[in-house]
Length: 538
Ligand code: XUL
Image: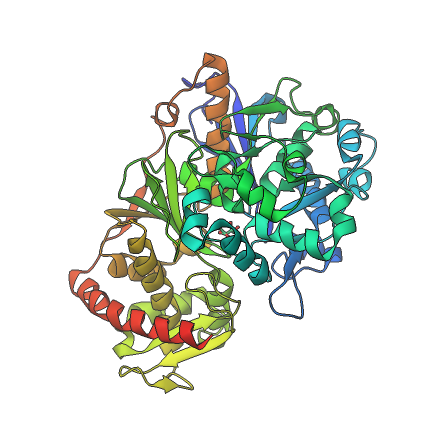
């Protein structure tokens, strides 16, 4: 382990990622080497919260929540594991975090004082049990706010007007629409709330023991921020709920120092008293940082609970039909564009269990042994209501080569169909918002699966690279911690690329096959036609 580098000597930077199914940590040294990784899985290690994939799926099929106290308990458990592993917590110069996007944490009046007064003699969990005004946080998988979305679009002059102002048309999972729903249905809980955090700013608040601001990049996922001015959009706030700005607090660029680690972490885990906390951001913005996407055409695909496609952009071009424009997490003047599919790894896993004997190796082998294009078979696997394209009615929609509905596919064809339709969809909708890849970086658990990488390379007709660690949210947060620390040291903004100049290169893992790419380009037209048909049926 090297201990000196141009970014400080003998110091470390910690990235935390509070994601849907787990909280993860990546510790980097000053030469950008990942020296330690750790994770706490919510379902397995905190079973008392009774989550499934980190969430509570409600019986209406649309509402999805998670208990915020579980995230508190998980943070403490993670830091305990790192201390047990003898991580040099006392030499960490800066920490930042990544959070699943859009989820909100509702803190009641007095919570700030409780955070300020954390003591090392008691657990975080015991001290924070009573601070939540809403015990179950709505998360990004929730799609129960259709009514609020329609009302926002109506009030602001239509979907394109909302997209032009906030970067996205009104989306069910976006925090503003979730806030509107809570205000309308549970007014006393809204009134009892002093602060509404995002999952990311809640993590930062836990670290500094105070209310931490929301960063502009994660703040773009709320339908509440003016995407160009990077300030709260008063027209959107007004339509959402009364006296909202005070509950949301400030919004700051991603490299901002939001405070020092609270003394609790020094006393309990031995953190350095000078350790600073950089604004936490969303998991996709952090992945953009972790994947170091700077040039137009460098596109990342993150394969997690959700699958996302994203890249940097110099100018925003918001669309009323798909995708999102966010503020860039590491370059205050730039933007990022993104497409999200909700049915990602959990849906692949379900098909794997049913069609590949619960084995990823077998799943990859089926992909490598079956023909690109699946002999014309196309399927839509909607285990959870889908975001892109919007399909609310769950189920599997299968079509033969002529576009006729089928009840089942031959053995193995579901494996190819689920993966092909996921990436054809990302290609189609990414292209519509200007994300045209010349090279793709794949990250997330499934980026270790060769069969999946081959489908990605062939569908997009571009080479696919992978990082050595699939954990880009936590690594991106660690890079951002270093970036924020460098900016603080220099007392001015330093380009992110300068801080990461010595980062290890990504490994090329798959080249596209031209013939297979041509098959997919032809297939895309049929895919688009069938997609429209499925969407229209909903
Ligand atoms: C992004 C989105 C998901 C979550 C997953 O808009 O909804 O990718 O961020 O954690």
